[in-house]
Image (cartoon, rainbow over all chains, first blue to last red; front, side):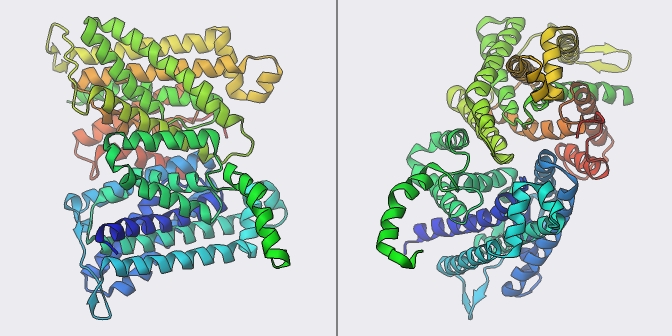
Length: 300
Length: 291
């Protein structure tokens, strides 16, 4: 595989993980989390500081998950006290404050950023291809986890909470418990992704985790389709590849990006592949019957 | 020294309040966080610059820029926000993401049309500084404080002394009941956008004059600072927004003047916000029935 293609693919894979994990919080638990990049950053800095202190890369990743998940649980607990809009603003605020901390504390390398050593795997320095394989394995695992989650009592509780929180509560669903759990899982995966990202880039800056990155992740989830597994994946692939494909239109890139997001929200707020989206309806109308006919009874 | 900082803080704070007022008026009626309001601030600054550059008349620049930006606001509401909000069962994050998209568009359109560089405002007040005792006052400060006070007085009069204002307050209280009582909620929404985007445009011109420069990235800091101000003001309360704007303006100036800040002053607004929200989740100033 070409070096350029691998680089783009790694980038898309990282954003796929971020979009999938954010979707657990936004899509499944229905919470307005606007500062996902802060947790991506916390994971990145945690892992980077650990490996710079001589700890093994493969140990730094679970540690990054633990630290981010623990901090994520605090946001989860805060979310119990705040309604939607307040939570959105608070998480935006946390994103800005975290970036300010990364930028101004010498502990995090300050404005110079932080250099990270390339980790090794079986005695070999890890290449882009190694990272890509690692990321793809993680994407598959996360998708399986989300699917398992959806089919469990946890997924059912989150669905009821999304539909009508008051009703869910009165039926004895411990809403708070599940909300916090969704925050922990979502942020922990973001932290893990951050750890990998830091070692892949070998240099991290506070601006890598700015609010605009949170916005990109949210756009991927929303453009693809909130509350599905395929949605964030398609969103990450489309919006992740867009800057490369649109390279010829460098000057108009952000305008197209902004315009697509506005038009999507205006005409397809459920996303390209979300429940009851245009494509989903057409699929059900034309393609599902054909597949069902061919698949015969095995589908039913 | 203290008085000087106080004046400085009030001046910065009134620009903040003016910028955030649009977001407050819109939240009061539509219950959405309109980050694109910071885009109106950029658009207003550029319209104002263009008109001032062409005519040399500052009053004309303020008036036309405010009217044009207000009109854009009404059109955005009519063709983007209203259709989104009329859809059943949308996630609360959808209008917010749409407004972020609009905000991105505004900055980039400004960059494409006017160029990426910095534009100088070069407004000539006839004198550089005025010294009153120990105080040093720049003419632009007087312009900002007086004009903000004037605009807020007009807003207060509209909201409290006109039928349209009554419609606004009724819709903000309870949109459904207001509608059932025959209140024209559409005109209340249009009022929010005209005034809100118009005020943001005025704030954009003021900041352009104050720092004698505008860039396409002008809206980035206000876009989030505005959010913390409207929450501190109790989301949807115009009076609260003025108080919160002044409070943040003063806090920032005092913190940086006395070297109390270990982090950049632009994140003070959010640290105050997070602390306040944890202690009092309904904001610093809130009506008892606001939540």
